[in-house]
Amino acid sequence: MNQPKKRERINDATPALNAPYLLWSLLFIVAPLAMVAVYAFLGQNNTFSLDVFRSLFATADGRRMWGKVFGDSLLYALAATVICLGLAFPLAHFMAAGRARAQRTMMMLIMVPMWMNFLICTYSWRTILETHGVINSFLSWLRLPGLKLLNTPGAVVLGMVYNYLPFMILPVYSVMSKLNPSLVEAAQDLGANRRAVLFRVTVPLSLPGVVSGIIMVFVPSVSTFYISQKLGGKGSLIGDAIEAQFMVPDYGKGAALSLILMAIILVCMMAMRRFSDGEEGSFIA
Image (cartoon, rainbow, N blue to C red; front, side, top):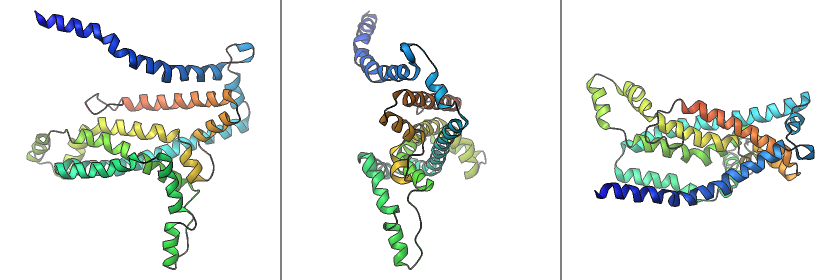
């Protein structure tokens, strides 16, 4: 008889428990998005209009310029995501197979850079990649010619990989650490070698974490602006273009570009969700 009463008390308390989250969402998610939409679609005489979007792509030069900006942003983000996945998957697999003490040590080493300021971590790469930086100084000491490393696309991708690699490792490791070892043993008993176990057992069961990691890396990479400014030499990505429009200020164009970027990200996330089976570990998708 006490069980229904407990459930009733829990159900009665649910709205009160959800109220802080709902208030936070309204103030810091819904309200900012509504303001962006208002600036993007507000025309003359305060009426609904698509003039801002038309002005962005009205000319051939405009279409070419914004197409290149969006294309470069997607290309850089895709390259960073692929590299992060290639580095994170074997590392997460190695961590999950290790002893508990080794796992804790490696997790601490991965988390320590995340405790540092994002801007400081990015700016520190300038001292490594610049003309008289650490790498070129070492090459000079070896009597080898210097390399142009800073202000290149490779430097931008490197900055993305360095800053976002932990966000790929953590979800993949989270799923791998929960895999049932008996499944691997069963595959080996049935004659599967290491390669077959990896691609037929480990990889399919790790897909939820992989999908979550891809989203967690791709989304900030495609919208970044500080990394490209400090390591790329100039703002050439969509995040830089949005920042430049708000600095002019031209809130209409900045808001329109933000909505276009948001739509691209949502499409990419929806495309990735079909690869996630909703298992534990897919905490983003």
